Amino acid sequence: MGIMMDDSRPIFVQIAERIEDDIIAGGLPEETQVPSTNQFAAFYGINPATAAKGVNLLVDEEILYKKRGIGMFVATGAKERLMEKRKEQFYEQYVVTMIQEAEKLGISIDLLTDMIRKKG
Amino acid sequence: MTAIVEAKRLTKVYGQHTAVDQVSFQIEENKIYGLLGRNGAGKTTVMHMITAQLFQTSGELRVFGAEPFENNEVLRQICFIKESQKYPDSFGVNDVLETAALFFPNWDRAYANELVQAFKLPVKRRIKKLSRGMLSAVGIIVGLASRAPLTIFDEPYLGLDAVARSIFYDKLMEDYAEHPRTVILSTHLIDEVSRLLEHILVIDEGKLLLNEEADALRGRAYTVTGSAARIDSFIAGKKVINSEMLGNFRSATIYGSLLASDQKSAEAAGLDIAPVTIQQLIVYLTSGSARKEATVR
Image (cartoon, rainbow over all chains, first blue to last red):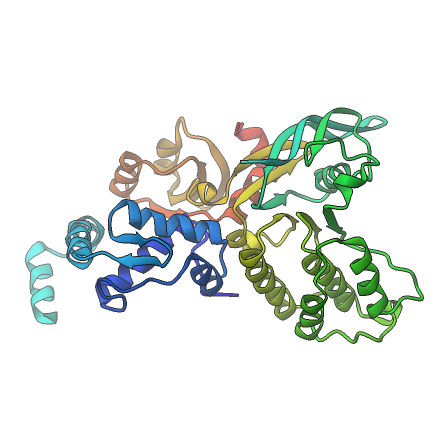
């Protein structure tokens, strides 16, 4: 049945995110070939056209590039650019949400900072 | 894009009952379509017209650029697997596959044998001695191995267990990647097949309700939950397609993408937001109560 996809968000976006995750985690080093559209489709059990759309999204963002007749490759500098993008999203996605939840529970910013220090 | 099927204001009337009501759509080449909707919505009637087993009351229908009725050039390019396909009683599984080989120009014998193995089908057994699930597997094998330019599966898996259905999905994707063709899949198991589909058509009470790319429908609706008073003010002016109450707690499903501004105001009001899957979306849109509240198109 393939690996589970979330059916409430566009699958091509999820495919792009998983490739991004893999580049950030080092599973797909720069200048290495990424799997083909059909390989993605088979692995995730999704329509090949949807997989292609996800890959093309990263080509548009110049994270991947196409070598004619060979396939898709990770661009040089892709990892660094993705890390920058994720850092920008980190504040909105995690910090703001965390502060909202803390406020709901009556946790002061000081206490929250202490909690983060303890963990770190 | 080449249109394999073009329907314009396609209509089928039975006496007082309009089964298919002015439906217009195009099926493009080499895409996988989901034809979805409730029982009796008109899905099978549409498929019967495409395959020339029924003649439309009015409207235009072109399949491979021509009218399908008694048109052998068109019909030999179509493989239609029905929910309860009938075979001659005396036939064995082998005979069905041999006969299919004569009908379908692209029939792949080696591939058919591979599928027989995958579904663990007893080839020598008589059709009438097969279990319901095995009978469905025969239809699926014919549908896949025919490699017809237009392949239509109408609820192909009565009696098939989850493992066999999963084999079907994997084989379909695998073979489609190697031999692209146009596929129409009609089913109620939306959660199981949605990720295989490129495009979705939803028919409801004979009318075309949705005609969109599958990925465009993911995130098309969202559910907010929280205290009734705050939900009521949040949903004012929005298209609510489902709503439930539990004491002072209310949940409402809203049709439309979640705007950043709405997300902020929902969060500020302490409302929870949850995404809606394609299956949930279609259930909400085709259940009677929602239809009255929201006009989608």
